[in-house]
Length: 394
Image (cartoon, rainbow, N blue to C red; front, side, top):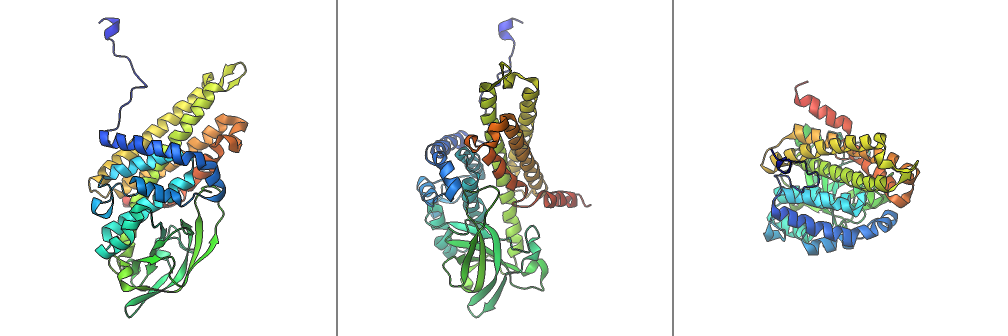
C-alpha cells in the first residue's frame, strides 16, 4: 500500500454525535454566537451583582427559552436534544450562575408545567415564560428537607375553592427575581408518597415573603432565596396535575433536571480543559512551554479521557430519555459521574494554572467554585449512589 493511501488519524476532524442533526448544529452556532457576543462580556459584572433580568427577555425574543416546547405556546417545537445544545452552549458565558438560573426556568419548571398543566395554566404561566416575560423558580428544598423530598413540611390545606399554604423553602434559585414558583407541598400528611401536591404560585400573592438573599461559595451570578409562605391563598385551579400525585410528578422532573445538569457538567469541564490547554501552550517554565512536560501532558490526557467518557454516557442516556424511556439508573449514573469529572477537571485545571489559577483574572477559580455545586444540587453524590445501589435490589 502506498504511503499516501495509509489512513492517518485526524484528531481535528469535526464529527457530530449521532443524536445531533444539521439543524441542531445550526442551532448550536446561533446560541453559541449569542452567548459569546451578548452574555460572556458581562460575566464579571454578573458575578458581582447577579445577572440581569434582560437575559430572559432577550433569550425569549430569540426563541431560546422554549426550544422543545410546542409552537402553539410560542415554543420552537424542537426535540429534547435542542435543550442539550442550549445547556452546552450556555457554558460559553463563563458564568455558572447564569447558566443555572436559565436551566431552572427552561428545564426544571417548564417541562412539568407543560406535561401536567391545564390549558389555562399553560396560557397563564407557560406562554409568558417562553417569551421571557415571566421568570420561574422551583420550590422543593426546605431547611429540614433537601435530598429527602419525603420530609417536606410545607402544607397546603383545602379551604373551599382555595388552598391555604404555610411553610418555607430555601436555596431557591431565581427566588428573588421570579414571577411565579412551582411549589411542592404536602396536602395529606398521613398518605405517605401519595400526600404531595404541586402548586403554581404567583410570587406577588399576599403571604409570599422573600426573606433573605443567601450568600454562596460559588454561582454568585444567580440569586438564591430563603422563602416563607404565611397563609398564602391560591385558587384550586392553581393545583398542577393531580392532588396527591405531586411526589411522582416532581420525581419525574428530577430526572430531567439531573440529565441536563450532567450535560452542563460535561460542557463546563470541556470549557475549563480548552482554556487551560491554551494557557499551557503559551506559558513557559524552565525554558519550555509547560504543555511539553510529560506530567502536564498526562494530566490533559487523563482529563480528556474522563470528559469523553462522561459525554458519551450522557449522550447515550439522553437518546434513551428522548425516545420515551425512563432510564432512572443511567440518568443517576450520568449525573454522578459527570459532576465528579467536572469537579476533578476544574481542580486539575486550576492546578495547571498555578498561582494564576487562584487569581480571579483567569476565571478558573470561578469555574472551580461554580462546579462544586453539581455534586450537591439535584441530588447529592450520596443520594445518587443510594439510588444506583437500590436499583440492583441491594
